[in-house]
Image 1 (cartoon, rainbow, N blue to C red):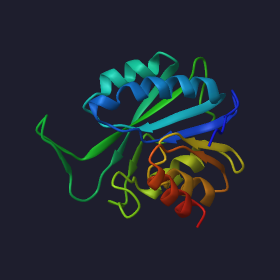
Image 2: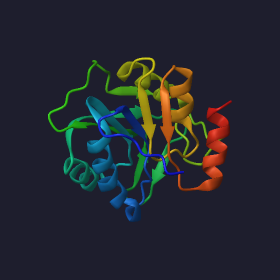
Image 3: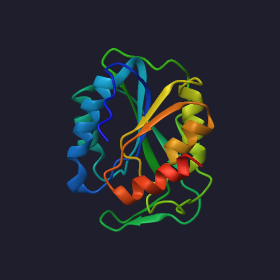
Length: 184
């Protein structure tokens, strides 16, 4: 809807971009966006698949500093990545900061998911991880942004924890459903 986010105004970008190879250019765009809008102590946390991790790290590194790679341990049945003959039991979580930046808080790099939650979107992530990292990395009233809104999990977690939230989604149906979920 034409929302413009001011430079240096965002405390946390917590997001889950698409994983397919054809979506890789979005990571470069995400890095440039994060570099522009994050505060000096702001943080980009992004779920990612492992298949194209080297390319993703390079693209984000064009505009941000790599901080750490965490992991979401997946409970329940593991996804099969047939191209690599892997039963995936965890999902990488990337931590990036603006050039010269530093996160304001200590954090654990591993979170155990409470299990599959797909009632709002095919690619929905667990609410627990979002709440955990939003609470650890921001304070009440801080601005949390998700440029790949999907089912709205980040928005729900941000609102539940008293943060200001802005989300973007190109799929109009998903955006309406996520907005309804976030707004209760």
